[in-house]
Length: 143
Ligand SMILES: [Zn+2]
Image (cartoon, rainbow, N blue to C red; front, top):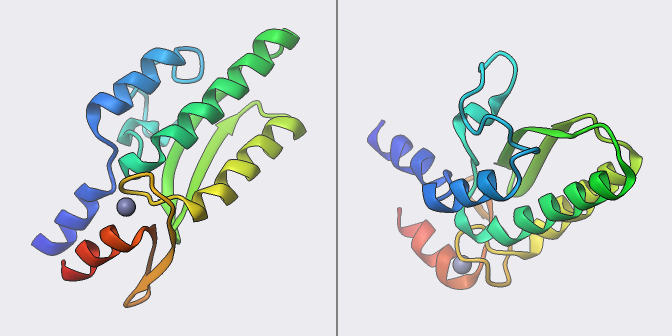
């Protein structure tokens, strides 16, 4: 149980980095974590490691710029997490182009270490998948 809690904890992005995202993109994250869990799972925060901060930051930047430039209906992010070793980014009001941006970044996450942001590859630890660099993989295996 303790081990499981530890692993779960590890999946959360550093709170300061998360705040930075919420502050940089107030329209994508209008209430931060203060949302009804029935409406949006962003109430649990950004559920992946710090290594993907850049990917998420750039994705949010591109989405918001595209919306502003084209005077479009505002997109709202409802969940950001790691699943089967890759980034998952869920949002409302997306169009085909935004879905493409998200698809591109989600696929890119399989080359970026989720914990430190260095180049990573998909690793398997007893059927638990994560995209990690060599160093982080060693640390992860020890746990
Ligand atoms: Zn790493």
